[in-house]
Length: 198
Image (cartoon, rainbow, N blue to C red; front, side, top):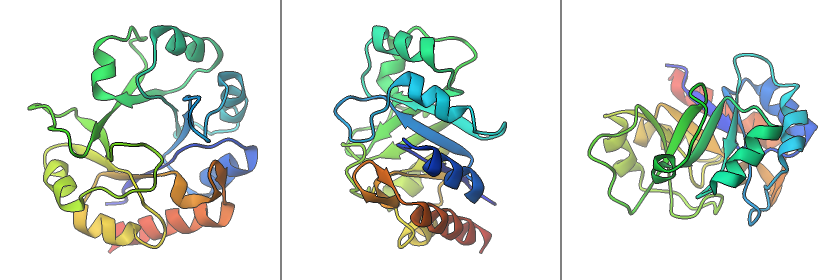
């Protein structure tokens, strides 16, 4: 199993290039004004132009309005939308847009899990880890992408404990909030791949 890796909160050409060169499966662009990783849709569109086919470009939001989603989709053509699972019930989205619902620790999951979902803590981008043993229970039922507090230093342990389909990192590859570190991106992807290879 090679695993699935996403680097989230990218805001520069250098960071996008580093993620792609490291061999990620997806890159995430955050559209949430309260986040230090927030980016304007037209800037995301420019950055996504250099992402090769086969690497998903994911629009990341949380509780967006329909107007906000429409603005994003007018300027940026993501492959997928990531937002809290309940948000999808009220949003009108193009049929071809993939969905990556977020389920959060501390909240009871739905009886029927999505086929693939992201599992993280109550607050995105906070750097706090989730209960990896609980994540492992859920990972046995669907394709779980583990997020929250991951870095090159602990991703191998997290993969061993939670047995996720994939991993997602943001603050764990930054030199400061919102600023990605190229070396940390490379180290994280290499550590995750090595853990899955064992």
